[in-house]
Image (cartoon, rainbow, N blue to C red):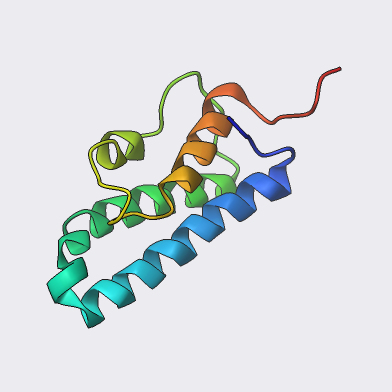
Length: 104
């Protein structure tokens, strides 16, 4: 699976996840009939990604060989409700295995 190659790219992935969550929230609020179920997990995901981003900003973030908390949340969510699930997987892979510096 693909991972971020440098710190800037990793931070960009996390920022992109926050943007996508905000976009999904707006869509779910607009079309509650077809996307309303997204609201159930959005708050949790957004809070967990914000904690991750805050740790990056403060300098307290550390790579670890374990899944990020949001992986428990996204594992059972249908891809149609969370179309950017792969983004969370990329963030998690980078967290677990570090930056993909292309060791040759």
